[in-house]
Image (cartoon, rainbow, N blue to C red; front, side, top):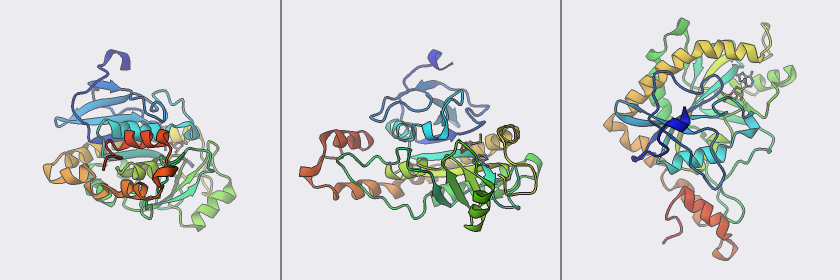
Length: 308
Ligand SMILES: CSC[C@H]1O[C@H](OP(=O)(O)O)[C@H](O)[C@@H]1O
Ligand SMILES: Nc1ncnc2[nH]cnc12
């Protein structure tokens, strides 16, 4: 399908949806272009499909590739975020299939997380700022509260089987691809974890470094292995994701309706993040320590960055 679509789109695209497990596309959105930007960090996971919603272009990226061929640790998160930014994206709604660590978060419920606990193992490239240009961005609140508030207001769009949209929660991001041990699952609960996945990081960190407004929407598919019901397996995740996709479509439609309103244009442009990472980079590495290759990569993210 990608090859028959134009590989260019002549307007900037401000809003992106990242789809995860069981959500490599969203029904009802007909792509009008398929972009594959070559970034300094390689190619994104999949062509970025451009579709229109209320006349506004929306980018859609399949995190694990169109055939789910990329394991969580193989997802080229830097290329994904850099590619989205390069086509103009400033706001990202990222879907993720998650296990529930709480009785009250039932399979098919959705969660708008506000915190992350990092249980990745350092094997995934996790920063743009290295190799001769250093930067330290704030990450106390890893998601975007403004986008979260919009998603929360759209809860009524969810209809499937009394599924609930929980408006906060901590996502524990494990390395995977194996699921957790029972001891780990209980430990994450004792830490206050609400849901568990393998994809929140480094995606959220990189979005922050790229000055994007980024909010994940978690869709519960299982109770991991702490619960007295069945332990998680892939069949269970896929079964519930098939059930969740209708709600994902409805919710995303409502969120995009809201984001396309003129009153939200500054938020969609992530004006509230503008300059945050660039400020964190500009003053760290002295000119004599800067690596020209690393400087070029930063320039890809932030064109004109090194001009005074
Ligand atoms: C197939 S279960 C594990 C897999 O599902 C989630 O993917 P995503 O976050 O992209 O929806 C989880 O993070 C794991 O990658
Ligand atoms: N139990 C679980 N652990 C990690 N990632 C998941 N994605 C869906 N269910 C999961």
